[in-house]
Length: 600
Image 1 (cartoon, rainbow, N blue to C red):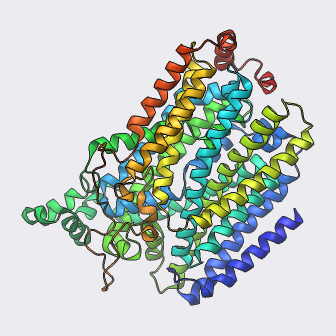
Image 2 (image 1 turned 60 degrees about the vertical axis):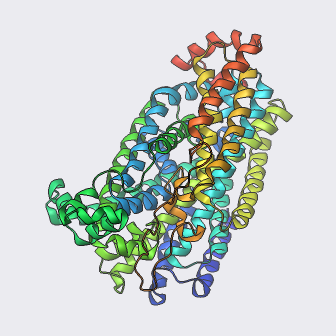
Image 3 (image 1 turned 135 degrees about the vertical axis):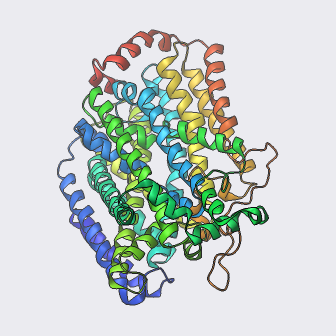
């Protein structure tokens, strides 16, 4: 652990050295020391947590699931930390600041996704599984085959999502504080390796909790400052947004010629109505399906339910998570509208055509402005929180991917479940190192790629392959190994094959998360004009109809995944799946003998 701390120190020194030579960020050179101090404090806190957690790792259960000793409240905050990525904090508030009502629809979609998890997945998975998604599938189906297909699907989803997050992190850190993209990706990668190798799920849990608390507290403080001048009256606040000249000018720019017949008040009112961002309802529906069902199929989210000791704590953790996540997404409404009102959509788009810097700019504005010490201190703090957000999310993804390699493939398939606890931990750490190193290489190689497309692809695969297999394994008696294999293959391949069709549209319209997150580097949005103002249409997606008329494959690939599970199960008999059905029903509803599941 001392070597890890030394590595963390060297990493900070590398970041400090890289700052002066890097591209210009939002923080002036004379105030960049503020960013460095904020990063040192935050990373130091994370390293201290990792050191303390590493002393408690004794068994494979400690490494994968924190020894099943996480309370419902702690797990609820950790789930919220896993779920609230930089796309939520920066992307959603940015979209709201540029497009008003339509941007807020992303918040609604992500919140609804967790209702599916609560009602269908959380408690049964906790009662049946042990460490991973493949544990759930292997309970009643052929253990070897189920672990192989489950692990491969976990690796596919995690790899795609992990690379997307790392590339997004590199881009955002470069934009926020001016560190070069390559240095940012390596820094994120090294920190996630230290966290996971040092403390496994225990470190990941506390890192997620710290990040979630910082994120929510920061957002609450910003919202309070924005809303206070209006006496915390929602009608008065919205009336100020509608009456603001900057907002009205933004609506007029987005509408173009049709805005000619509208008065100033009508233009402002349109900012709070649908139609400024989403133009194709079918695409919106397809994206919504991928978000809702994809969340229930994300491996790193499912692993969270194995960390609690009882089914009751699993339910409590989801309820806490829903409250925290729902509350946070409500805050994004005020962050986005507040940025539009105080900073102005034009200034937000000038700093980043995708609007990702709306929340940091709002913090800078509220604390004194771009040239002030207070303003740049607030910006540095928000940048550090955004950095912690990115590192926390990639930590969860890395843990899920390494668990698939060490627990499912090595222990479950190669060793047939026979290996000492020390050997399991050693293999898990080696797998983490290998997967993490690969993620850094892929993150560097993916520079300039369409990251929004990668995120959409990760959600589409999870929704089309993982979700149908998990759901039907839990609730359909005839589901068996052949159906699981068919569902995984068809779901994954259909999402992959239909995704290139989707990529024929503008990347900003393909996103499973706000595409605005990556617009500056992907070149998908028009650049600011030479005057510094956003060019007409900046950040606005230019939708080109695909051959199937869809920009997200979820509407087609999800039904295909379900159909493959059904047909595969009906065409082949599996005595084990039928025999284990009654035991599975009892276990998933009662949690009886849950510890015995580790033997499968």
